[in-house]
Amino acid sequence: MSPANVAGAYVIVRDIFHLPHWFRQIEALDYQVSADVQLELMDELMRLGRRATRWFLRARRNEQNAARDVAHFGPHLKELGLKLDELLSGEIRENWQARYQAYVAAGVPELLARMVAGTSHLYTLLPIIEASDVTGQDPAEVAKAYFAVGSALDITWYLQQISALPVENNWQALAREAFRDDVDWQQRAITISVLQQGDGTQDVEARLALWMAQHESMIERWRAMLVEIRAASGTDYAMYAVANRELLDLALSGQAVVPAAAANAELELA
Image 1 (cartoon, rainbow, N blue to C red):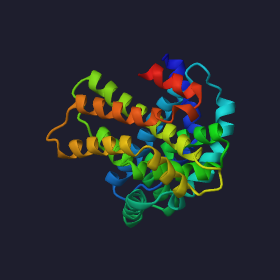
Image 2 (cartoon, one colour):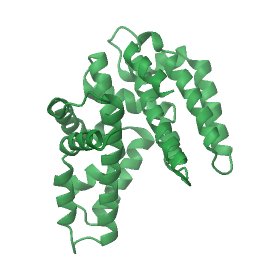
Image 3 (cartoon, rainbow, N blue to C red):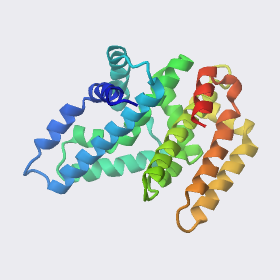
Image 4 (cartoon, one colour):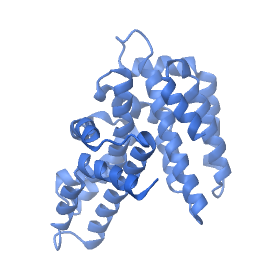
């Protein structure tokens, strides 16, 4: 991508997440919280900015339109971001709550603490909003399904392991980012498949249970792969490449109900 493409995508991200506002909030904490806490807060926002910029570069490629994307994504992000504690569940919510409380205990204002504690989840709101566009379903319902899929298949844990992979050269850095991008797409594809289960009257939990029953054997293979990863000593990029392929097979198992454009995007990535 050209520097102009990257800058254009970042401008969209800057505006939909209101990054300058949050950076000013952090800077205003001088001498009120420790410098280490301020740097950690800034690091989280910069990580969000980088990942979201890459998402727009991959998802929009040469179709960037700042006015359109800010107008579309901005209001949804604001609405969903304020509901994270309602949308998250289980271990994911517990981890978010622990981070939020730790920031508040360190002297960070509550609203800023909520925002920064949920940066990784705020990033996932981008594919969630896109999945809402595809299915025509309420973004909050799509978010519940997306996070429920992450919990049920341990995708959230798996992404944490990918993010923790050590990087020794540029190729490994590119591979790690590609792994994360692929998992993001796969979780989105599975979420769409889940939402299209049943007759539309069931709640998210019922539709997820139906989808998992239909894909029981493939889910068992995926879980067996996670057991091997947990038991492995050291880190091996090849291991995650194989695991990503297993998750891809699971995501593509619902290909009949996943739009062709999404399928073509995945084939291009692969």
